[in-house]
Image 1: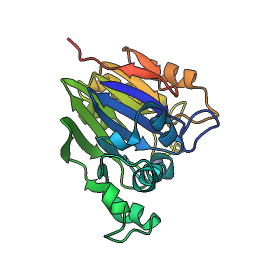
Image 2 (image 1 turned 135 degrees about the vertical axis):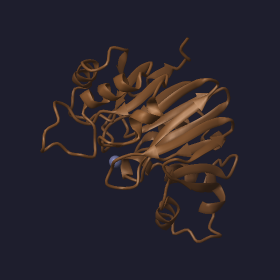
Image 3 (image 1 turned 180 degrees about the vertical axis):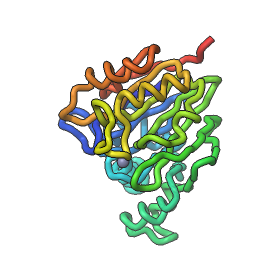
Image 4 (image 1 turned 120 degrees about the vertical axis):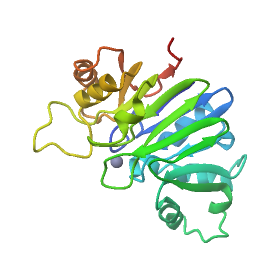
Amino acid sequence: MRLTVLGSTAGAPSRTNPASGYLLEHGDVSIWLDAGTGTFMELAKRIDPGSLDAVVLSHLHVDHCSDLFGLYGYLAYGPSGDVPVKVFAPIGAAAHLGAFARASDEHVFNHVLDIEEVAPGDEVTASGVTLKFGEAIHPVPALVTGVEAGGVSLVYSGDTGPGSALMQMSRGADVLLCEASLQGDRDSQTYPFHLTAREAGEAADSAGVGRLIVTHIGALMDPGRSVDEAAGAFTGPVEYAAQGSVFEIEGRE
Ligand SMILES: [Zn+2]
C-alpha cells in the first residue's frame, strides 16, 4: 500500500500545503482519504480523478471535505470518469453535501457521486480494500478509518480528541496516521476535540503499531516539535506527513 500526502495543514490550507487529504493506492486501486481544501489539484497531478475507486470523508469540517466539489465538477462537467464514484462519509453527509450542490434526487450530483453514509462499527469494501470505521471525538459526526488490503493495514485518526476508537482500531496496525493538532501537555484548558502530539505517540505505543505518522499540524507550528513530542511516548519510527511525501507501507514480519 502506498500513502501519498496531498495536504496536511490543520484547519485551513497554507500557501504551500493544502488542508487534509491523502491518496491511498494498493495495486491499481486508488482511494482519496479526506478531500480537504487544495487537495483536489494535488490528487489530479498524480492520478486521473475519474479513475478513483472511492472517497472517504472522515467528517464534514470544510478542511476535510470541501474539495469533494472539485471532484463533483470534474466528473459532472469536466473530463468525467468511471461514475458514480463511491463516497463513504458520516451520517448526515448526503443531505449536507447535496444541499451545497442544490441537488435533488435526479440531479447530476447524485449521478456522479454515490454517497454512502457509514457509522462507527461499519465495515465496507471498495475494490477489494476493506474499510472499517470507528467513533472519533469531535464536535460533528466524525470517523476513525481503518484500511486493510493485501495483509497491510493503516489507521487514520481523522480529527479526534481523546477517548475515541483510535486505540482499539489501531491495535497491531502497520501504520497509524494520526492527527497531532496540539503541542505541549494537556491540562484542564486544553481543547478536547484534538490530540496533542504526545497523545498521538501514546496511542501508537499502546496499540503497538509499526510506525506513526503525525499530521494535521497548523501552519504556524513547528512539525519537528510535534515529531519530538510524539517520539517521547513511542519508541517506534515517528515521521511527519509533509506535503508531497510518499510512504510505502509494508506488512511486518
Ligand atoms: Zn475537524
